Length: 505
Image 1 (spheres, rainbow, N blue to C red):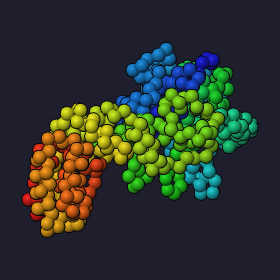
Image 2: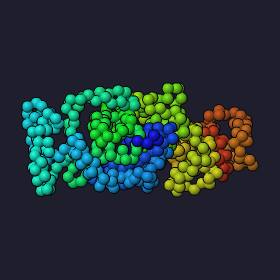
Image 3: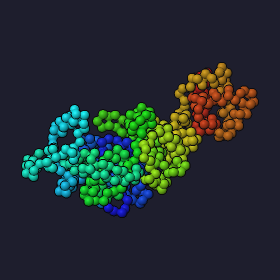
Image 4: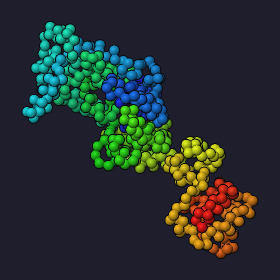
């Protein structure tokens, strides 16, 4: 095995990439970059029945959006390709046969019906059927049949599988980089299928062969693969290969209740569990994505990094290069990490406030274009400068500052009732006259002028300022009123006041 650190992320293209998968990819990426190594993407598509159109492109786009692109993989061919298992399938048979020759595997000819009958028989007796050392001599396989019988079956083209021959009573000692030393009794393991007569390997064989041929030094994967660890360890040993180091990441748990985070939790509580929006090609169902919901990729990766790892310091905000610097695999927790949608928003708000105003303005311009609203880039940037501190998402700037771009078409009834009294229309008409006289429409000058007029009239400030805000905004929200008036300009300010008098007077 190469001394160089090489890690891989190996998803199946059976649908959109879950946020748990993104975290696995992120930890692999951070580990690789920390050790000046390679991050490989391998598409495990041997299960053609579950293959979903567009899923592979979705996986690649997700990694790129999150800022964790792979060094080698489909479309970025390195020296270890091809990177789709379906394109490698011709190479697995010889490895399966090699295991038969070394007495580490055997042909099994049992039909699905026969195995089913064994299972039912065991269930009736209150037992569990496991195909392994204690019954394999009694079943239909090459350990129990004569050489002639085996040859006849193979020559006749009978269906078979190749099963791994688990040792009878051995205590395996395996080290996991996160969980430490583990001891596994092989007596409890079943003889897993490695290869089928249709020429397709199972996940277990393909996985080991590919990791070996791609010189993977560390296998960093989800906790759900822990039950397969003993088999994978024994397969390396059976081939006489050095095993990589293994690290099994904790599960991401539901925000409420027990169990693994699922799409249903996101639907129920209103947050995405996928990085990008996904439209199911079969059902047409659309699932929300962090990108389309307006999250910055930096907020998502920062949040994911903390789901199962911490740097051991008080620091919570990490840019990607800082995560690379701080990441240590032995600081990953063993226990599951509860997903917290509010914490994700908190990260988002931080990155929103940190974001370059020009970048935010470009995103806001896209929202405006979609709504067919025209505004100069300079004007949009000014709005962003005024509104960014109040926003969590770019869309909030539109929702909280729409009045910079369009005049209100209605007025909040509760505020209107409170602010618009019998004499308000006359007052607003006088305010229009004051504004008409203004040469300069800068916020500071306006403020001085209007304040002087209010004091001269000896009316309460609220009596003027509340209906004035209502006329410009349509509600009691938004930044400094004079800033709004300066931004929308003299003509528009007066026009909105006139419209309010007409509507509310």
